Amino acid sequence: MEDYLSFRKMITPLIIQILFWVGVAGSVIMGLVTIGSSFSRYGGGMQFLAGLLIIVIGPIVTRIYCELLILFFRMYDTLNDIKASLSKK
Image (cartoon, rainbow, N blue to C red; front, side, top):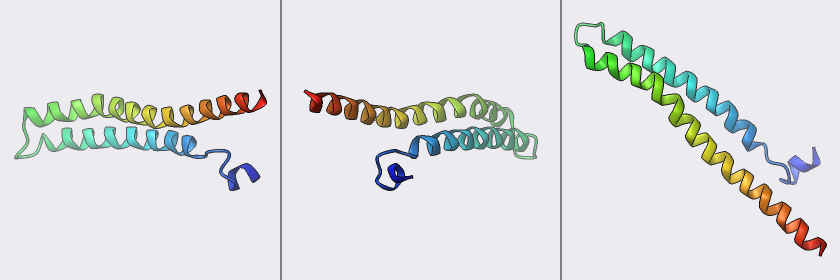
């Protein structure tokens, strides 16, 4: 608990994983809504294809974004390891 309160241990990577699953669910729901609205009076084939693209590409884009965010935290951890090894010398 002391590590969390003194900001030595980060909780953001866990939050990023949660946000990834929320983003995936949001992409799938948005794609399904877009596909469903393509069957309305003003919908069309392009809207159906857009919904499919949202379902396929949305989670991939969300994953890339979350991986970039986690990369910053891994770089931070690595830099702390380097700092600790240099201070031992």
